[in-house]
Image (tube, rainbow, N blue to C red; front, side, top):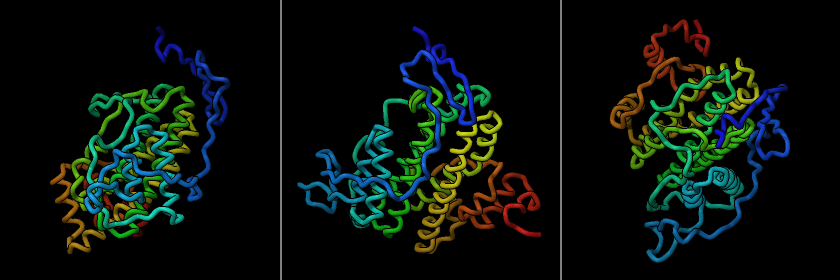
Length: 346
């Protein structure tokens, strides 16, 4: 039996980098077109009854199921294993909340079901050090990169949905914000999956790591730690990593994939901004100094050490204050003059 690499003889042509994969049962070559930008005009989520296996709410009668609402629906989407179904359900859920057809009660407390999050049998999850480097000059190397990015976005859907169902007692805007994040992450996953298909691959074809969800597990009982360490730490690293990855794709002639990175960076700035907003909201309500609290939580939950280079302009747009940016400047071994173009003046 021939391997996938032996079967897949690829050629790239045209400004959209059309990829033709031979020896596959496809009626015609696929040409990637960037889908329309994410909007709020999404199909309505159909009204369904909670599945018999849905978790019971502590505030609901012992013999009943929790009411159908945005937070129980978020838990249902989180439990969904099929990536495409999860993505479409998440976007429909956000649309339903925006048009007022699905309530979002903050006081509902839900029991955690087993085996979260729902995810497919593949990709195989391995330690990060076991993942090889990607050669952007080969179609296979770019496919591996696109798969890694799709895996990040798939996990980001789960992270945002988890914040919606898990933490009761937050303001209504908290749940709307994180449903918006989940819907946009679902859009990113769809973009990357479509582009990956152009390379003759699908999500699950390559190994991946589980670092993002690991931090979600560590902070499951602390909404303050979750806001500090997932959006402000792990997702903020995407702001730093995106420009050099985009440049490598552009240099390799993959303009369509580079355009997807532009969409993702634009939206991720907003996601990190949401994390900053709610982290500071919680600090203010608790009478906590946000800088001291972040340092304490990063140590307590063993957050990854921050390393440069940093995208100071994107981080400033995402709500990091000048004191935080100054700390990153010192950490990166840069001087103030090198960071001035991102908004400071002489």
